[in-house]
Amino acid sequence: MNFIVKLADICIEINSVYPELKNFLKDYLVSDTTPDFSITINEDEILAEREATSDKQFSLTYLETLATLRKLAEILPSYNRILMHGASISYHGQAYLFTAPSGTGKSTHIRLWKKYLGDDVKIVNGDKPFISLDGEPSIYGSPWAGKENWHRNCCMPLKGICFVQRGTENSIRNIEPFECLSLLFKQVYLPSSAEAAGLTLELVDALTKKVPLYLLTCDMSEEAVQCSFEGLTGLTYPSSTK
Image (cartoon, rainbow, N blue to C red):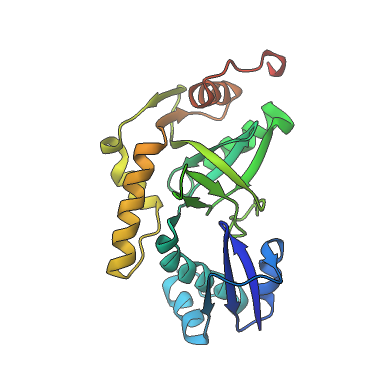
């Protein structure tokens, strides 16, 4: 089965093994357009995803979504885009990315933003957004959105990247790239080909120069939301929510 999707403002023709992949990508389907490139997923690539995961019970249709993402992430650096692990939200049209190893609490933190700041907060993506360095940095939703399946087909200017760590007190501070490069590279997909990996390194370097970086230490309280909100946006936390 073949169809065309638009991801991170790039049109891609996908030739899939299973029809379920088209449904997985339904919010990003486009028609009557010329693709920028094409990819074909084969059964060997799907089975390779099974070998790469610790859970051998995943369905072949789910594994095809992983194989598709891997193939896209190998190609997109040539279009000035990278894949990053993190949860992204927007507030009044400005996007912020919270990133940390799985299980740290970034999804919980953006859930608290939604709880206390309401409809002013919009989900961009809950797990694997794409970032574009074509001009001003921007972040895109994608259907690879984690167990919560939080995603929107949208593009937002990226105004901050926040590294999250658990703590008993709430604090946020600006950090320099050298303080977080090891953390950052653990969250960015690094392609297997030398050329694509080199492009990715260049894009990450550009990202750290264009987007403010923060370290957030937080618990799971409203005070944590106020701390990160004021640190990231530069605005006073809305008193009506208190």
